[in-house]
Image (cartoon, rainbow, N blue to C red; front, side):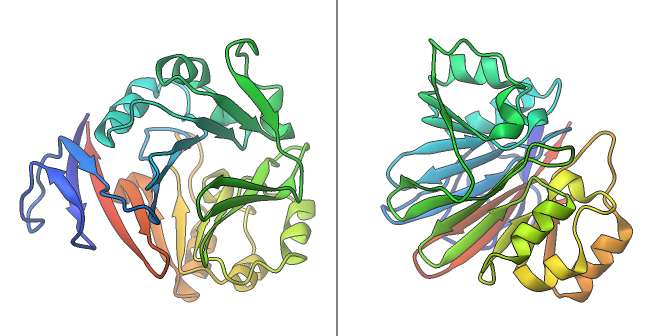
Length: 274
């Protein structure tokens, strides 16, 4: 898998090799160059499934889900690209996010697995090898300096998962994994009006996200992962477009990194080519 720099949205990034972004260039490594109070939230472009990486200026690496079936080599290539040699925590938000969990735990010396109800019974890693922590709904957790995570909803039924609001200073990233009437009502009952970025559930399939939720969250950016079997709903995409929300597809735009400081954020995409 070759990776190419597609869009450079800010200047304080360092690439190996460094070249002008006016033409696609092969990227051998990415240094997010984080200062102490900065965060990088990266949505990986895999051929199937979800995996996202949180990197903090303190050196903390946190992985959210581990990709779909047969994507281990892709995931390892991307982690290597972002110079990740160890991972402190893996957060599991859905049962189909555990495909590469055992290999990730072993290779990257994972200290703990954090999971809600949906993913808990789906993975098979000996508990003696790694600490397993269950997050409950409405619980608030500190992950790194300036970074907290709140479980907005933790579902057990079909089309439900663990939905987490990540707060970094005044920035809010809502990682949505549920798409049910119960979860939608829970979201509408929460003061989620300052969401900057939302990760849509179930690959933006038909019926997974309503116009009421779009209006309630009012994000600037929506991210949609790629699935081999599910296509985004054209009506949902039209609603997002009409709401002036920038939509990033990992299939189309590649790996999407959002670098956040205490006051602003910027976006970069890196295309992949098999």
